[in-house]
Image (tube, rainbow, N blue to C red; front, top):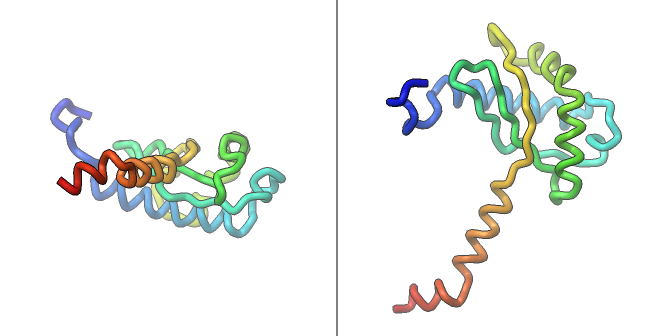
Length: 129
């Protein structure tokens, strides 16, 4: 990445590949193809997959519905990332399947915090003026 590119968002190619991987990963997880008790106990959502500029690394943001045991789920997904990468390779037609990394999605928590701030009396007072 050049210094010029630092202010730019992801390319169209990064976005497209990220969406392809997100859909395929959601399908694999919803079908229950991963044989793991912790993962099987939860319904997982995959809100976003971010690709590196060279498309060799996919950071998959996941969240169990309800938010419970998110760190355990991510740890177990990390254990099975080789299997998941193989499953995705058979579903997504890419020259190279990127390495997978899993992280807990915090966007729901962030949006709840923003809603809480907007509903606060201080903001309501400023809006009324």
